[in-house]
Image (cartoon, rainbow, N blue to C red):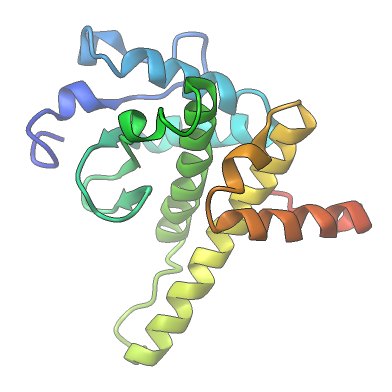
Length: 193
């Protein structure tokens, strides 16, 4: 991970599904350890979140915070097999409290996890597609990741989490509202993860 960022040891952690999600021997006293624990605690609140934790653990994916300005709230790096959440804490503190920031980070992590799953299941197109095909495939993969995140958000909302307070600040809010309405209209529309 040192090739990903020089200070990766402070920004990356091995998230686990146990009561101690952070391997403190690897990150020592990182300022991100508490945030990693909070992310893990949020994920543990739903069946889908617990499944995600187990898959992250079994795949040995790293979960990292990145302060680079990419214009994205998160990404999955295939090369380093890392799920990355943008470290926006200082900028977001003027808009929401720390609990909502952690919730936002959990939703981003789930979205990026879906991209990891897509990659591991070879859903990213190869050289047989045209550039126009690649644009369409890219949009479909983003829609899939947003729908997957919406299912996680729906499960969290059933546990009392204020997901709409977070999602309504982003474009996924409309996707979540459509997903929620569909599930409420017909529970068979709920994704299985």
